[in-house]
Image 1 (cartoon, rainbow, N blue to C red):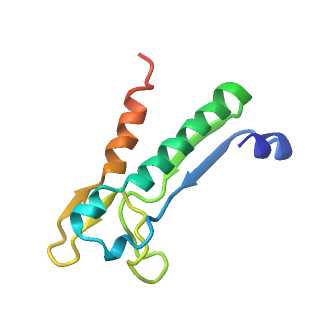
Image 2 (image 1 turned 120 degrees about the vertical axis):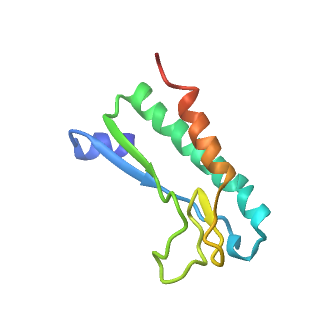
Length: 112
């Protein structure tokens, strides 16, 4: 963020980030819900974004986790980026650990 801010002198920045867990589509539903690598990635990225704002003065206006649901972006559902998993047979949705870690990250840093 600091590089973008200092190089291009943009008035504000919006960003998005996402992370597919390796071979997540091959895992059972319980393993998909416990997506520790994605949680670690999101927490690291968001911590660095906060550091860019507070330490470097970057005018970061928005950051979106990509994506909220597993999607068909690349022509199949094999790459899971979502913070929810969807049972393709019953259409039941389940939150993954990364969703709760994402929410907790913001709740612990909200100023009153």
